[in-house]
Image (cartoon, rainbow, N blue to C red):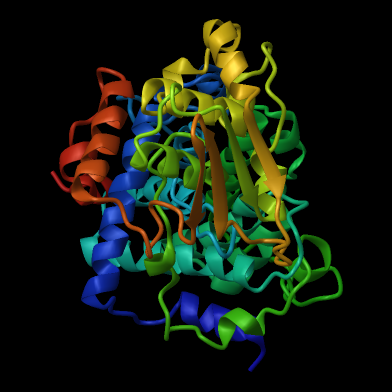
Length: 427
């Protein structure tokens, strides 16, 4: 059996989640829905909503954080943007894939369209979709050029939706691959185009299932073929993932983001906050990071940066952590960027490349803080929010409270109090 055939058998298999994995799926579902509700009023959200409304009329599926409903593909589009736009969504770090973002957006729309879903059926579909999206990243050995959360995410999401819809999985896989798109250029330029790529992947995942269910064909060798995924989007070997299918549930390996900023910044921010460092303590701060981390957050501070750029600007994020003792997305504003005190502090932050040979590594990292009477040298083997360094109950509660504060007034409260009931359409 080919690796692709093994993947499809897993996607359609009869699974019962182990209790610990089920708990992880439920916890991460709640985290994803909360950050999606928080993103409803974020920069760019109005334009995304206007485009989604133009896709057609209908009330099949709910929008995260507001009371409006749209056709399922359009709702998935809006919700994918809302989940990723604050850079607060969970990520499988070894895969470098925000595996829940596209899957939750697309699967939630599909569940709404059919009028609800059994809770266990929904959690299994979620875990399967996340597993496949993360697995494609784990099988890769190339650095990111395409935006893997979208290119791998659309495939995991489409198979999760097709599982719920009863659509042919092989066609859904081929059609999802044929819809895959998104590059790292939006990341480099710091644009809201980045979460748009998640939005587009979520919409495409629903459409792939719809087309497959209607009998429309997809390519037969979308992953391993001559022009398949591992020839075009990433180099790698799919068997690195499929050999372990069903033995390790990848959703249990996903990290949550304690702060609404690029995941690559969280080792630095977490160390600053846990160390109780303030502006008075720091003469200079140096982060020694893997090449991918430097590429993601080692960007220069500019007074005219966009909020999307700011979320990924390591010097700014360190300055805000030292100044405010937290990261609040409402601080990503022209007034903050023009603040000479913030600019001066950011000028004392350096992000330096270490000798890690892994092009996809986010850890370990090292922070050297120069203080008035010497320096502090801190090794950070695991980033806060990862399975090896989970959030404390207090930290998790603080994240949920900030998400609720950022959400709009008409957000369904069950997103924060009973996310599984909200997701499955339980009255």
